[in-house]
Image (cartoon, one colour):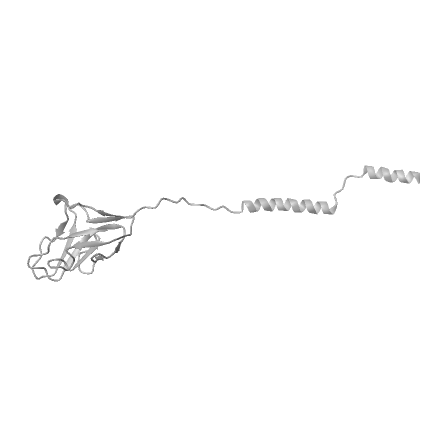
Length: 174
């Protein structure tokens, strides 16, 4: 028996270290989790765009009220008692421009549209529109109106010009 016991002892010392099934499963799970964790970390990318500052809409008069750069009118005369359509613009540009529109503004006409010698309608028209009743963006006394970005002239119409013609008037914007 002595010989057998020493043989077993000798065989145990010579055997290679072994991993148990449990250790192999645990190491496999850890390896899979590590790979999956890395894959989940880089699975997609999202792009965040730049955000500019806001721009302010502006209503710009293209000529001032001084005598040398006041609005001009076309045609330059009307016939008493006859319908008329008048386009008011600056000598070298449109009457007003809207940048970064639309803008909401309130026009106030003095004297009021429809008063004696005044046009019965007033509107804003683009350079591609012809002045006529119902064309463009209608303007009403002290009533807010939305004006898109663009360049505009005034269009004033009436069904019957006064004997003295169409009076001069102003439009104030608020």
